Image (cartoon, rainbow, N blue to C red; front, side):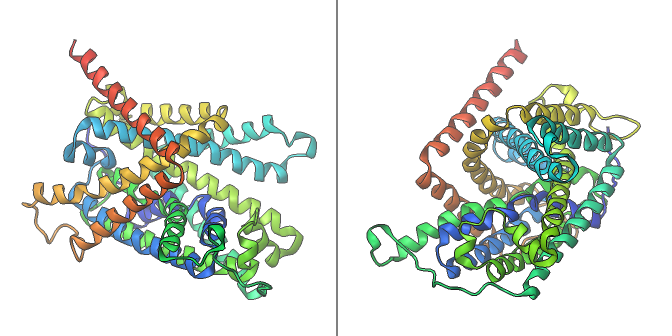
Length: 445
C-alpha cells in the first residue's frame, strides 16, 4: 500500500532535533569534563563531535535523497550488504531504543513525581505508573495518524528548544570564578604525551557521540516526506545546525556558570543553571525541562522505530503483520503496538537492561560507520539518477570517510576502555545473525 506524503521540511527538521536532543546534553558534559581533565580538551571534543556530526549529516542527507523509503535505515543495510546484517543491526537498534524509551521515561517520572505527587507517594510504584502512562498517551496519539503525532512533536520540540535557550541565559547572571587551574594528570604523575591526550580525547568522544546520535534514523521517514529527495537532506542539515549550536553554547554556559572543576563531579548540571535564573524555584523549572525532553524523546521513538519494523516486515525478516498499515489512518499499527509493548515491558526490567545498553553502544558505533559507508555502494547503484533532483555531499568522498573514521575510532576507544562490553555486543550481534538464518530455514521448510 502506498503511504501518503505528509511530512514537511519543518516537520522533519523537528523530528531530527528530537531524535538527538534527549537526556544526553543534561548528563554527558559531566562525563566529558571528567575524561578531558582540562577545558581545552573538553571544548575540542565537543567541536570535533559537532564537525563529525555535520560530516554524518551531509552523508545521510545524500543517502536519504538517493533512497527515500519508509524504514530506510534497515533497507540501506539490506541492499548494500545482506539482509542478515540489516536484521541483526536493526534488532539491536530497536531493542536499545525501546530500552532507552523505558529508562528515560522512568527518569522523567522521577522529576515529575517530585512536583505532582505528595512525599508518601514518591516511590517506585508510582514512578513506574507515570512512566507507563506517558508512553501509552503518546502511543494513542500516534494511533491517530502521522499528522497528529508529527504536529505534537513540533510543539514539544519548540518548547524544548525554548527552555534550553532559557537555561543558556544563566550565563548573564554571573559565572563561577576558577579557584584552581585544571591539570591533566597521568598514571604516575608523568608529563602527558600526545598518546595520553589522544586516549583521553577518544574517551570524551564516546559520550559526545552518544549525545549527537539519532539523526540517522531520519531516513526511516523517506516514504512519507513531501518532495523527499529535497526535503530529507535539508531537514537533516537544518536540524543538526540547531543541535550543534545549542550544544556548543550550552557547554560553554556549563563551564562559565558552574566552573570546570565542579562540572567534573556535578550531579545535576541543569539544576544549577535553573537555580541561577529562578532561585529555589529552579528545580521545578528543571523538572519541566526534563519531562518535556522525555515526552519528545518518547514520541519521536514511537514515530521512528516502527518504520524500521515495517521495512523488516516488508522484506520478510519479520512476520508480514509488521508491515500492515491501517487504511484509514496510514498508521503502522502492529509495529507501533509491539514496539510500545516492548518499551512498557522493559520498564519493569530497566535495571537489567542498563547492561544491554552498555553492550550495544559499541555496535551502534559500528552500525553508524557501516551505514554511512553504504553511500559508496548507493552512488554506483543509483548513478542513473538526475543529479539535479538529488542532494550530493560536498567534498566527496572526504566527508564520509572522516565520519566513518571517527566512529571507528570511537568503537576502538570503547573496546580499549571496556573490552567486555564490546565483546558482549559482538556476541549479541552474532546471536541475531543465527536467529535470522534459523528463521529463514524454517520459512523454507
